[in-house]
Amino acid sequence: MMDGMGTGRVTVREAVFEMLRGLGIDTVFGNPGSTELPFLDRWPRDIRYVLGLQEASVVGMADGYARATGQCAFVNLHSAAGVGHALGNLFTAYRNGAPMVITAGQQTRSLLPNLPFLGASEAASFPRPYVKFSIEPARAEDVPAAIAQAHRIAMQRPYGPTFVSIPADDWAAACQPVVPRAWFPDTAPDPAALAEAARAIMAARRPVLVVGPDVDAEGCGPELVMLAERIGAPVWTSPFSSRLSFPEDHPLFAGHLHAAPQQVSDTLIGHDLVLVIGAPVFTFHVAGECGLFRSGTPIFQMTTDLEAASSAPAGTAVLGALRLGIPALAALLPESGRSLPAPRPRPAPPAPSSPPSAAYALHRLHAAMPEGAVLVEEAPSHRPAMQQQMPIREWGGFFTMASGGLGYGLPAAVGVALGRPGRRVVCLIGDGSFMYSPQALWTAVQEKLPLAVIVMNNAGYGAMRSFSRVLQVRDAPGIDLPGIDFVAMARGMGCPARAVATPGELDAALAEAMAAEGPFLVEVAVDAAIATLYDEKK
Image 1 (cartoon, rainbow, N blue to C red):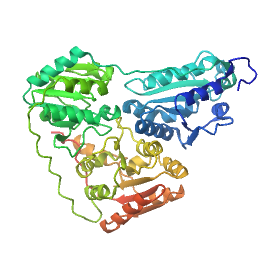
Image 2 (image 1 turned 180 degrees about the horizontal axis):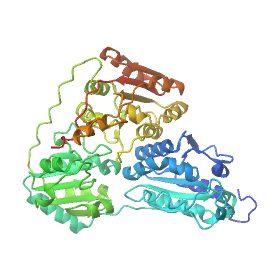
Image 3 (image 1 turned 90 degrees about the vertical axis):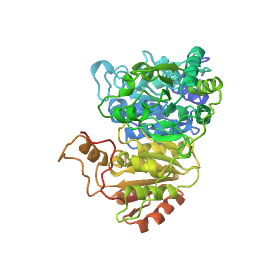
Image 4 (image 1 turned 90 degrees about the horizontal axis):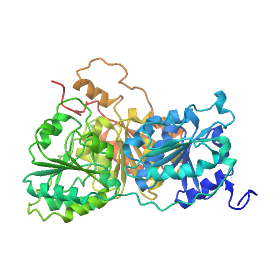
């Protein structure tokens, strides 16, 4: 339809919707405001609009959806206030490498010189530096092309969010349609760099691999397993990996590296070559010296992330797509002849107690999850217990946040469930984390998603309790969270829920959550034991 504008001319709104269809985008995540209404007018039936009740939840949902599908998500936010609300999860999306195009309404162009109500000053600068591209187009007719460019940049590795600010009156302006372009953004690593890495690996007697989330994001997990078996080297998960990095029941899986320099160094320094794939060198959370960097141990880093490669304090970077680089490197290597070790022994099942320990609750949760279920986690203080009790085996079966910012897990689980229809999604979340984006549960109810939400309630910020020990901080305020009724909160949004406080109640509640047709919340009161996340400060 040309709206009488002459041959080949359409409205900006029409051009954008046609472009979205051409890109295969059939879902828009949003929380509307007045400056977005011209975009929302006469919403097309072939594009799903997913409503979130707060903008941080909206971006978290889009992040989970993008990472679960491998496709770019499309987000519509409200001017400066809405973008401001979203910034925490926008930062997380940037760290997660989640591809999305975020559009935000702006006041009409004629009002902008006079600082209007709901006008965004320097709109394109507001979300920087945590977007890959940001623009408010100079002319209304440039909006579709700007969105197309934002999409291409979001889908260029490393993936990430982009931003386009759109004045409200631009949607009705005339423009030329934009035809989506073919886009093949992946680049292969330099053959000479791969050859150098292969020579170093063949010369090493005790190599080790450190693997990060980009392997799963690029869909080359099976190729990585073949490479590790060809080398015959132990494989560690990189610190704070936000996805499955290596099957955790494989004989070569060695464990999870801590985000502490001394622990990383102590773990790796006995090897004569470190091959890092799809991760930074290295992500740290606490201060300290990493003697590995001064040891002379060769480090090779395969990554698509130029920033991560350039900021590494040591090592040789091999830039390029992992899905191309991993098989190419494997082809240069002979079989090592090293025999595979025996799989790591699993810890003994935790004993039941009242209230249950976190380890016991997670052990039972692992047993209750059906085959093919996807785990989305935001329970930082329980992560060591989760890693012990819930080994992840399936590529695409685990998501958490790379940023450390809370408020991601519940909306991300909603997005993952939308992106993986028919799959049971389990959101493992702490009581403190839940309170950052509880309204995402309402969206899960409206969309009738098969989402089991397991709230680990230790009545406080458990990670802060642990860090207080590490940093020798005493009597810090703001750590305890008594008196929150998660069951009442869930039921108030239409979600059935149960609270459990004893081992005898736990299995039945978990089974009910896993069998529910829609979302179901289980609040588990766990003991107040303080987890050890890092060694205490000496």
